[in-house]
Length: 477
Image 1 (cartoon, rainbow, N blue to C red):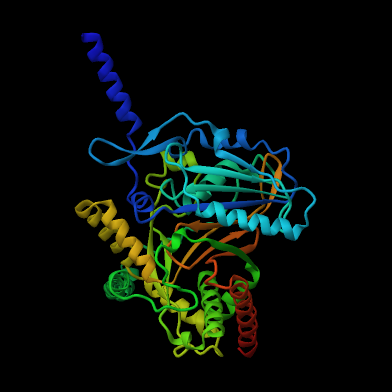
Image 2: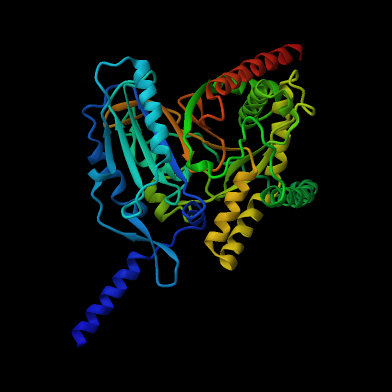
């Protein structure tokens, strides 16, 4: 009996150790009756990948990462936790077989249809929540493609970049890690004079925080965007098919606009997207130019800004792994306020709006509110609120800073990289990532509701117009 008690105690302790890590609050929202969100990262190889040892590479990359070797279960108190399980890595890898000898255009269509399909599929919860899809046939962008899909409860975009940093190498020198642009801000002078200068800014931040936080609450619970060509208002949109398209811009060209207008890269690309959206809306329905449209911009709430490798995130960079994001409401400028004939105003409007939101504590207050509601009302009630916040807006924008140099996997160089988010109850999701001096803008649009080719065309036109007008303004200066 004593031996049985000891064994039982050992088993109980082992079970508690297996369930040591709780699911993060955002993980709760991403896996509920209202939301089931996934991240898809697409790696485009510039050489054929017939000999790429995908299973062994995935095993080396994932086997020491708890959330990639765990499933979500509820403990005796009803709290969701990660439980370590035995993983058969080959079961998570799918190799797609198309018909040999087709044209590149045909392969493009098959790949697009396949990507749209797997984006909408839910992963089984009986095994770790990730998949890898290997497409060994050429498309117009790659000789071969690998798609990594994982549940948003595992982590966010920062996590994804840490994963790439840990599992891929520099194509120029495999012995070197990937390099990313530094995101650290310079430290201010520690003087009383500097503090006095900051007092007006602090007062402004308090006012902005109250204003922006109040506006976010109104948009989340009371004020719904108008129905427009980019917002169908269809219930349960997240279960409908999407079409995924890509646009590529030169970062050097974006920086030229930035310098000419005295704004940031983020302001420029946001202004381009908003201008392209309004051009599209105006074409589809001339009355929609003055209707209310709001973008939910995803923001990182980590104190750590630069990317870290997976093991460093799990050990030394406290709180870096997982989901640490929030959202901000950014209004798409109306044509009555920003005439379509004055495209640079879209960039300036984006600049003033984003600057105002950055100079506030609204993002932090939103996180605090959601966590308080999580404790009081439970995860399903909060997930319902997050779902309503998304459905009340028109689109979602998420952006990541990618590697500076070319990546490689097992000496197979990667020429392109993009990502998207699925399971979002919006007709339009836009994701942005930089890689090798290029900016990739990916659109996920509701099939049958948005003409994705026309939308992509208008965003391209918006870039060309803004680039030209910014150059003219610089010449006049």
